[in-house]
Image (cartoon, rainbow, N blue to C red; front, side, top):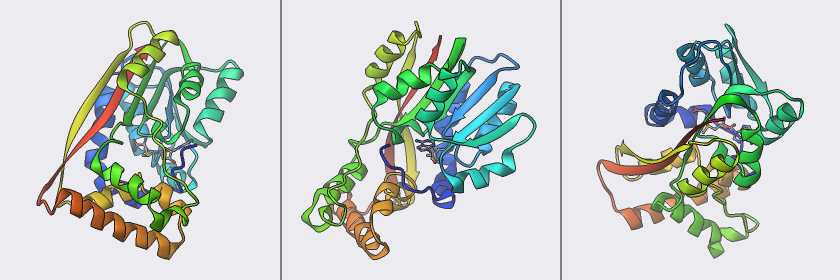
Length: 263
Ligand SMILES: C[S@@+](CC[C@H](N)C(=O)[O-])C[C@H]1O[C@@H](n2cnc3c(N)ncnc32)[C@H](O)[C@@H]1O
């Protein structure tokens, strides 16, 4: 587990529109077959899971998430064939496939980047797809952007390395072609893998802090005491402004990898 920390639905939801656009793009690439059995891995607050269920005319949709806080929000979207279950994605995938259960669509938006060892993870996730079924996954692929580089440099700095016990959040996300090869090897003969740069227009440079507080920085928040995390945030914002300057608005090019395959 790369370490997502405990999720804060409200913080994550602050950029709902920007964050949901790739979800809709991913959903648009799924072939519609009414009556599918769907699993949404890392279903979060559940409203997009319920939307997907209705949009596809699915028979059953199961949202899987490990966060109690996210599942508490998701409960409002259960019913009419949608349900949610608390589980770790890789353990869930291995247990289901081990029991001979599979899904017509295995869908995951912005979640698998939190799990390390994608070779092992994709083996497990692919095994959940029924013969003839589909796999659709979207993950951020932005670890080379200044916003991520600055957080890593800070974590490695003398000021924070001790407080973090040497922890630096790793990025398990591989190059797009790696996923294409992997899916092919796992029995998806015509994988479609795209790297898309999403144009996010933020109010100003420092708005990046709010953006990453709901994602990248959760792993640091989990490992730092309150005052240390506040210190980390202040140092992060200062380093970011020093590198990027005050820009109003701030154009944040955000790379994401979207993939689809049919088994
Ligand atoms: C960035 S949110 C995305 C939520 C939703 N798919 C969406 O598009 O809005 C990532 C979700 O993945 C969940 N998650 C991260 N690692 C997980 C794991 N190993 N097992 C289960 N859920 C996990 C988090 O709890 C969080 O709800």
